[in-house]
Amino acid sequence: MELFISAKISPKLRGLLLEEPVDYRKELFSVGGNALAEGLKRYIRRQADLRHDTARRLGARPTGLLRKGAARITWMASANDATVNVPIVGISRAFHDLTIRPRNAKALTIPVADAAYGHRVRELQRMGWQVFRPRGRDFLMGRKDGGEAKLLYALRKSVTVRKDRTLLPTDDQVSATITNAMARHHARKVVSAA
Image (tube, rainbow, N blue to C red):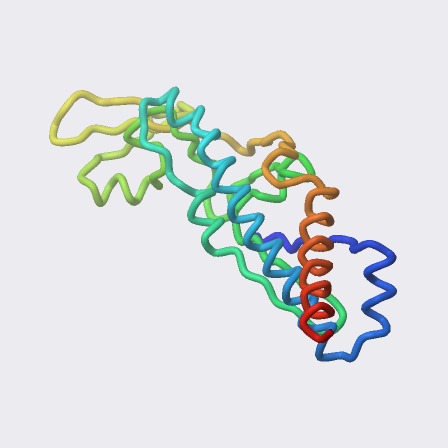
């Protein structure tokens, strides 16, 4: 699921925009969209470095999900607005709790071991793990290279991940980023035209 960010610009800037030709409005919205996209990339990369609690607890390497997602942020603009696309799975929990349910399976697999963290069951199997579910149990175990069986995943019907507004900048920060970039661009344009 992707998240599209929209923000308000100041009424003064909105008024200025209405007086400008269509091409210049698109140019200004492009500047605002680009500034927000770049600002979000920086913000999310900083947040990513702070969010490895589960990986640390399991002794696993972080997946880099937020960093990779930040690199894929895009934007587009028209003469009327700009849209920034944040293609990070679960990023909407910046605004609300997120309940996750299985789509094509009976249960979610929640990693409880370093070997399972960041990997699907099929990936582990391709890596040489024999994964099995003990009869009547709500977990999966695995064995690799004939070694001792190890608890890998807890099985759950659903999981709720709590809202975390710090995943993204505040609404005021978003609006300020856009407005300031557009205002600076407009001021440079006016100065260079004089």
